[in-house]
Length: 337
Image (cartoon, rainbow, N blue to C red; front, side, top):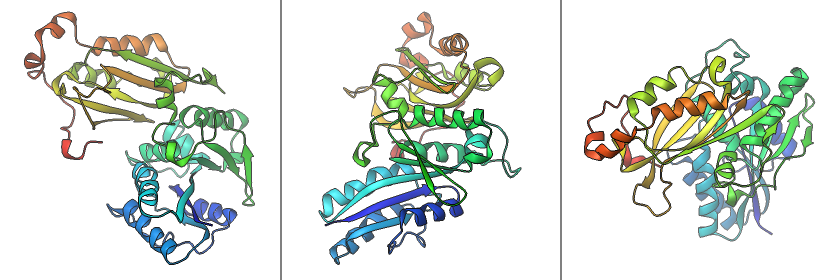
């Protein structure tokens, strides 16, 4: 018998507490009083390995601090377990989200508490959902049927392999069938909806009104035109409601490095990845996936096409590209991922 660990992530502590109780938290080792420092995932993994080495067995449910990095949690903890001990393993990563947060941060319905969200909260929420094997939604019973089903549709698109549960007012977890094969923790680096769409795996084209658009082009973006475009083109009146978009991007001024494109709600982030232009597995250009309601595909594609280098600009080459004005924040390549 091993120590089987369930990690519970999410923004709201009361809902996480309820889910931990529903899961039967037993002797949670360091979870409730842990703080999310820069080495949180590594330090948590090492403490759980130490518990297993001391003979701990059975089940452990760890409530993860809201600010912990979901990506590092999903990738680092299972890796440390695999390298250090046969006696401990991650059973599930459970993302707990409230229906109010999903509607406010991703669907832009307006906050459930009247507060303006921090620019990183929507992205953090989306990542928690994408790097989970189980998703629990609290408070969905308070929404009308259309809004509830949109949440189901979004989850089936952005995290299609995660099992879905509703958290009822009495603390009961009501299971909702997912749309894909069950996610395993060791697969979380490749089972987010945008990754599966880019891989060409067959997924429903639309779910409860939430559709998908995949955009590809080998040419780099002109950074000035892209910055100008994204200031207005994400507006629902023109593009439809883009709830989440992810992918890989090339900027002409940063020709040696592949960027990570991410929007959650209204916020766009462009960050460096570890991929360089000469990596054999590097995509040749733009690979972007958009999830949303009523997506205006022609408009989105036309705007993105207008941001690509023209034929004359492409022929001018990288030395000329470096002279273009680039309004995006500089990349910290030392920490690109």
